[in-house]
Amino acid sequence: MKRQVQLFDLQATSTIKAWLDRPLSREQRILGWILSLSIFIGLIALLGGPTSSDSPESVYSTWSIAHGSFACAYPHVKTLSAPLYPLLSGGLAWLLRIGGSVHFPSAAQLGPHCATAFSAIYKWSVKSGALQRTLQIGDVSWLALMVGLVAFLRTTLRGGRVWEPFTLVAMALSLPTLMPLIEEFHPQDILATGLSLAALASVRRGSWVWAGVLIGLAFTSQQFVLLVAAPLLVVAPSDRRLRFSLAAIGTVATVALPLLLLTSGRALRAIVVGTGLSPSLGRTLLVETDLHGSLLNYISRAAPIVAALALSLWARRRVGPAALGADFLISLLALSLCFRLVFELNLYGYYFMPLGVLLILLDVTRGSIRGCTIAWLAMVTLVFNPILFYQFANGTTYGLGPFRGIQIAFLSIAFLLIAYDALLPRIRWYLVAWFILALTAFVRKGWIFGPSHTAFAVWFWQIVLLLTGAGLAAVPFVEASRQRSRPNLVS
Image 1 (cartoon, rainbow, N blue to C red):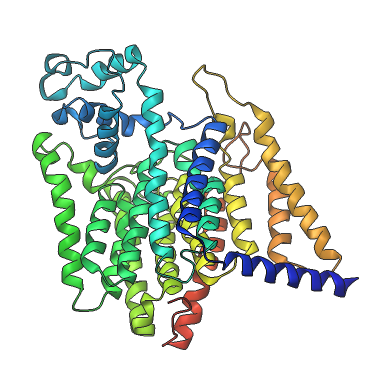
Image 2 (tube, rainbow, N blue to C red):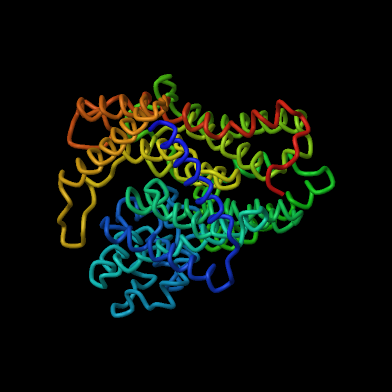
């Protein structure tokens, strides 16, 4: 019986890999793109999204740009998103005539230096009913992620094969990928991730100028992209670094300078710093140090970049040109993004979106999806389960049923897999550890979100998810660094 089950597993694995390696026609690839987009939008709608939480960080800028009031796109220096997404969504809002049935506030209503802009625009949005349609523009961010993924896969042996739609569908079904639209409204994070992947594709093709342009655009969408730009600058060939840097700086200047002039400099903070510089959810590892004021902010933003640079320098000296190999490059960038999560002042599920995308892409690049990657994504989903807070336009929510339902479903699947393993017999220790931790959190109501006030500390989940995520990301990095001159797994 044991030998028969093992033989069946091997045959099934071989059949699946052969199917995934099958080339696709152009029409089939396009159908795969459409399918992934439909799943992404449909799942977000099914879960009640896009959410309006945190939407003021971008929708007021969107509406101002859509109606030509660029001067009031950034009416003050408080927390607002970087400019690329508001510029793109503002253009779409203008094309779709969102809120066009009601006159947008005049310059007099917006006030001198846009002092009353938020209040006036809010009243206009209520009368025009513009919010829901504006939030739906966030779904378009999937196109950037899809293009970035496809572009990168085309630089490997996985592109143009069944692997391509498989990867897109896996991303669309991964709840951490959806969290920037269903937990908090941060489509700019998805946009920045997609542009970063397109930049990696350009790097793989040797087009460092285009890589700089795309990284510059990604930075004007979300500043965590510096953790992608810094390693690329280090591992770039010496004769390409200047091109890469100038292209990135020039792109940022092209996007930023007009807005800085039109807003009298008020957009500067959004362009340079972005959002998230104030503790608002529990106590992360950095907040636990009890540092205060500007020092805490400087550490939060500067320390991850310094750490990423140090890791990249060590990697370049260790493996040389092999640092530009597909799997090693993803590993390096995933580890760099982990540094952001080490030094964050807050911890939300959508913070893990870029890392989750890279972990899935890493497995696809190496030719097999690891069970521990799926387990990690499932744990992120449970820890930051946002279903309790899904609110529809009529003000109703899902309540506690689906919130508990996801937990019970994941625990049941894990238990059945452990029981199946017992038939072989074999033990997947990561699965056993996952089940014990998830069951303990379920019984003690230890998840970060939910009705309980006895959740496990934020820093506890930060350590668990960081250590396991970094371990998953580091596998090819460790393999390549040990061999020094390891050839690309996928060229």
